[in-house]
Length: 159
Image (cartoon, rainbow, N blue to C red):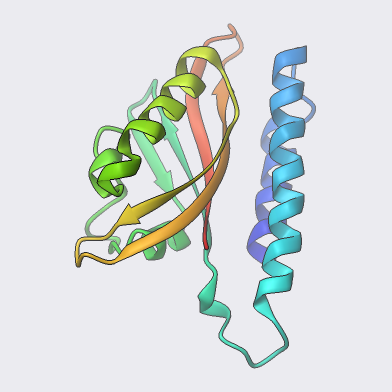
Protein backbone atom coordinates (compact mmCIF):
# COMPACT_ATOMS: atom_id res chain seq x y z
CA UNK A 1 0.00 0.00 0.00
CA UNK A 2 2.94 2.32 0.61
CA UNK A 3 3.96 1.75 -3.01
CA UNK A 4 0.62 3.09 -4.28
CA UNK A 5 0.80 6.10 -1.98
CA UNK A 6 4.32 6.77 -3.24
CA UNK A 7 3.09 6.54 -6.84
CA UNK A 8 0.24 8.94 -6.10
CA UNK A 9 2.67 11.36 -4.44
CA UNK A 10 5.04 11.05 -7.42
CA UNK A 11 2.15 11.78 -9.78
CA UNK A 12 1.29 14.94 -7.83
CA UNK A 13 4.92 16.07 -7.62
CA UNK A 14 5.90 15.42 -11.22
CA UNK A 15 2.68 16.30 -12.99
CA UNK A 16 0.82 18.70 -10.71
CA UNK A 17 -2.51 19.78 -12.11
CA UNK A 18 -1.62 19.65 -15.80
CA UNK A 19 -1.31 22.40 -18.35
CA UNK A 20 -4.32 21.87 -20.56
CA UNK A 21 -7.71 20.19 -20.43
CA UNK A 22 -6.54 16.93 -22.01
CA UNK A 23 -3.61 16.62 -19.64
CA UNK A 24 -5.82 17.40 -16.63
CA UNK A 25 -8.24 14.68 -17.78
CA UNK A 26 -5.42 12.15 -18.07
CA UNK A 27 -4.12 13.08 -14.64
CA UNK A 28 -7.57 12.76 -13.09
CA UNK A 29 -7.91 9.35 -14.73
CA UNK A 30 -4.52 8.23 -13.37
CA UNK A 31 -5.32 9.56 -9.89
CA UNK A 32 -8.64 7.71 -9.79
CA UNK A 33 -6.91 4.47 -10.70
CA UNK A 34 -4.22 4.98 -8.08
CA UNK A 35 -6.92 5.52 -5.45
CA UNK A 36 -8.58 2.29 -6.62
CA UNK A 37 -5.24 0.46 -6.54
CA UNK A 38 -4.67 1.76 -3.03
CA UNK A 39 -8.06 0.39 -2.00
CA UNK A 40 -7.45 -2.96 -3.69
CA UNK A 41 -3.94 -3.47 -2.36
CA UNK A 42 -5.17 -2.64 1.12
CA UNK A 43 -7.95 -5.19 0.81
CA UNK A 44 -5.68 -7.82 -0.72
CA UNK A 45 -2.82 -7.46 1.73
CA UNK A 46 -4.97 -8.82 4.54
CA UNK A 47 -4.10 -8.73 8.22
CA UNK A 48 -0.54 -8.40 9.46
CA UNK A 49 1.50 -11.55 9.11
CA UNK A 50 -0.06 -12.70 5.84
CA UNK A 51 1.84 -13.10 2.59
CA UNK A 52 2.16 -9.56 1.26
CA UNK A 53 4.11 -10.77 -1.79
CA UNK A 54 0.88 -12.07 -3.33
CA UNK A 55 0.28 -8.68 -4.95
CA UNK A 56 3.04 -6.60 -6.45
CA UNK A 57 2.74 -3.05 -7.72
CA UNK A 58 5.45 -1.50 -9.82
CA UNK A 59 5.82 1.48 -12.08
CA UNK A 60 7.85 2.25 -15.16
CA UNK A 61 8.51 5.10 -17.50
CA UNK A 62 9.70 4.87 -21.08
CA UNK A 63 11.29 8.15 -22.19
CA UNK A 64 10.94 8.29 -25.96
CA UNK A 65 13.10 11.36 -26.45
CA UNK A 66 16.15 10.02 -24.63
CA UNK A 67 15.47 6.32 -25.36
CA UNK A 68 15.62 5.61 -21.63
CA UNK A 69 13.67 3.23 -19.42
CA UNK A 70 13.18 3.55 -15.65
CA UNK A 71 11.69 0.64 -13.69
CA UNK A 72 10.90 0.33 -10.01
CA UNK A 73 12.33 -2.70 -8.18
CA UNK A 74 8.83 -4.21 -8.18
CA UNK A 75 8.70 -4.16 -11.98
CA UNK A 76 11.70 -6.47 -12.08
CA UNK A 77 9.86 -8.83 -9.74
CA UNK A 78 6.64 -8.66 -11.77
CA UNK A 79 8.49 -9.51 -14.99
CA UNK A 80 10.79 -12.02 -13.19
CA UNK A 81 13.88 -10.16 -14.35
CA UNK A 82 17.07 -9.24 -12.54
CA UNK A 83 18.63 -5.81 -12.44
CA UNK A 84 21.44 -7.27 -14.57
CA UNK A 85 18.82 -8.18 -17.23
CA UNK A 86 17.78 -4.55 -17.25
CA UNK A 87 14.30 -3.22 -17.93
CA UNK A 88 12.45 -4.08 -21.11
CA UNK A 89 12.29 -1.49 -23.84
CA UNK A 90 8.93 -0.81 -25.48
CA UNK A 91 10.14 -2.83 -28.46
CA UNK A 92 10.95 -5.79 -26.20
CA UNK A 93 7.72 -5.59 -24.18
CA UNK A 94 5.55 -7.63 -26.60
CA UNK A 95 7.91 -10.59 -26.19
CA UNK A 96 7.06 -10.67 -22.47
CA UNK A 97 3.30 -10.82 -23.14
CA UNK A 98 1.09 -13.84 -23.58
CA UNK A 99 0.80 -14.34 -27.36
CA UNK A 100 -3.00 -13.87 -27.27
CA UNK A 101 -2.62 -10.46 -25.60
CA UNK A 102 0.14 -8.96 -27.76
CA UNK A 103 -2.09 -7.32 -30.38
CA UNK A 104 -4.42 -5.69 -27.80
CA UNK A 105 -1.54 -4.36 -25.69
CA UNK A 106 0.26 -3.03 -28.79
CA UNK A 107 -2.95 -1.25 -29.83
CA UNK A 108 -3.34 0.20 -26.32
CA UNK A 109 0.24 1.52 -26.31
CA UNK A 110 -0.16 2.95 -29.81
CA UNK A 111 -3.36 4.73 -28.72
CA UNK A 112 -1.49 6.21 -25.76
CA UNK A 113 1.56 7.26 -27.75
CA UNK A 114 -0.21 8.55 -30.85
CA UNK A 115 -3.54 9.83 -29.53
CA UNK A 116 -2.59 10.60 -25.91
CA UNK A 117 -5.15 8.19 -24.49
CA UNK A 118 -4.88 6.92 -20.91
CA UNK A 119 -4.05 3.26 -20.35
CA UNK A 120 -6.27 0.94 -18.35
CA UNK A 121 -6.15 -2.76 -19.16
CA UNK A 122 -5.65 -6.25 -17.91
CA UNK A 123 -3.43 -8.68 -19.77
CA UNK A 124 -1.11 -11.61 -19.17
CA UNK A 125 2.65 -11.81 -19.03
CA UNK A 126 4.40 -14.95 -20.26
CA UNK A 127 7.53 -15.28 -18.12
CA UNK A 128 10.73 -16.86 -19.41
CA UNK A 129 10.05 -20.01 -17.35
CA UNK A 130 6.62 -20.41 -19.03
CA UNK A 131 4.58 -19.09 -16.11
CA UNK A 132 1.60 -16.97 -17.11
CA UNK A 133 1.06 -13.99 -14.79
CA UNK A 134 -2.12 -11.90 -15.05
CA UNK A 135 -1.58 -8.18 -14.46
CA UNK A 136 -3.56 -4.97 -14.58
CA UNK A 137 -2.04 -1.68 -15.61
CA UNK A 138 -2.97 1.96 -15.65
CA UNK A 139 -0.89 4.68 -17.16
CA UNK A 140 -0.71 7.77 -19.27
CA UNK A 141 1.50 9.43 -21.81
CA UNK A 142 3.67 12.32 -20.60
CA UNK A 143 3.56 15.50 -22.62
CA UNK A 144 6.43 17.89 -23.24
CA UNK A 145 5.93 21.65 -23.01
CA UNK A 146 5.32 21.75 -26.76
CA UNK A 147 2.37 19.35 -26.40
CA UNK A 148 4.14 16.35 -27.93
CA UNK A 149 4.25 13.04 -26.12
CA UNK A 150 7.75 12.39 -24.83
CA UNK A 151 7.21 9.43 -22.49
CA UNK A 152 4.71 6.87 -21.28
CA UNK A 153 4.23 5.96 -17.62
CA UNK A 154 2.62 2.73 -16.37
CA UNK A 155 1.74 1.25 -13.01
CA UNK A 156 1.38 -2.53 -13.17
CA UNK A 157 -0.23 -4.68 -10.47
CA UNK A 158 -0.21 -8.44 -10.34
CA UNK A 159 -3.64 -10.03 -10.03
